[in-house]
Image 1 (cartoon, rainbow over the protein chains, first blue to last red):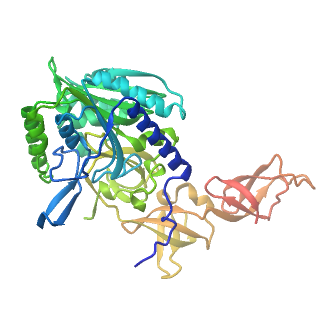
Image 2 (image 1 turned 90 degrees about the vertical axis):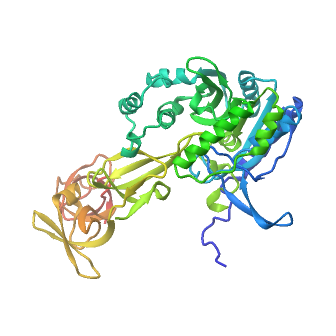
Image 3 (image 1 turned 180 degrees about the horizontal axis):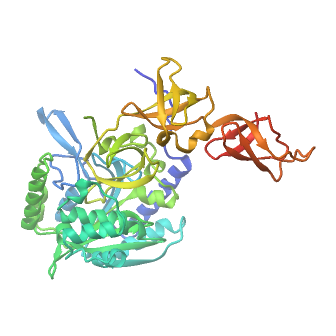
Length: 333
Length: 187
């Protein structure tokens, strides 16, 4: 046994911040309690996993009664699938505060395990859910920081506003030219990138996000269909995803959808993601057949959102990194 | 050829960037919740000292630079080269004008400097943070003025010119901060 030589047994957050964190959790629970949104818990260990190529699941193994030979389980990257199964079972509006796990993600704004606040509102569309998010965050943050009225822009509007580019029609060459004009210095590999979604992510994270949500909540909605994830598509030219993201002080706080309820379309998206994983030589993930079965039975019309709670605490506490608001960040775990 | 993956990026890592050796100053992991991950680094070109930003796709690899820092004692200059010696192995090495640059004016014989070697050749020479140097030329100050207010230029034995308090006289040894070029105290 080796004793750690430094003081890294100590929390990475101050006790003052941990108290603030506890207060915020109480405030959030009170908010949902007043609105009759039910708190639920779903499994962290899952037999299936997300197929999203942008997310990497941790794997672990259970051996014992039921699975004498052992069975692989995945730590969830979000509680979305089992929460949708509860919705399909008729539970009504629900929320959950839980730890989620993402391999490969560590940095100032990332920790491989972090706390997610996820909630679903039956009979809401994503616009109505944005109103509720605004009310929640105003309640939770206003004692700690002044906030101006929230604003909303479409994905296209923010691209046009900050980099004079239409993200839906721009070609790879247009994206590359915009990166150059706006002085993003990128590696040769990135310059040769021919995936439109990666280009959008590059420009969004480097040139647009830092300007979003300065002293106010900024919602971005109407995402390109290729970045729909689990959102419904709205017909049109181009078709847009009923998805939104929320930013405050340049930091991505939440991602929400008017939830896709079509089991067939969901299966097609899972298969497409599996194909992408294969192309990128990423490990194959078992598709969540139980989610698909629930969707087939029928998911009520609903909107849902996932909010990074650590980031919210970080903003309330005026800190710069997640480590300062998590009792023990990964390097002290 | 050694390489580093973006997961290995951290401050101080020496890599090849556009054909020049460079040192990572800061590495930031950037990733939208549902999207492509990037490594956004601030990186200093060790040849020209300039710091720039560069973004890599997560998972990319870049070539490592064979760069090491060694402590060496400054011996003398023959105008073209500055000669140093490893105090343990007595191995000698010559740094050229590009490597020494403006720091030449702080180099005093016997002082131990940090030499950054790239592929075994001196790339930069860093003098100690503070050096003690003799004043070789300065205007005589007012007698009895010890306030330190005002100040005057003084030329030091290595040729450096620094601003010193009025009471400092020719022949005195003073301590100077080599990073800022400021007078610190009498030695």
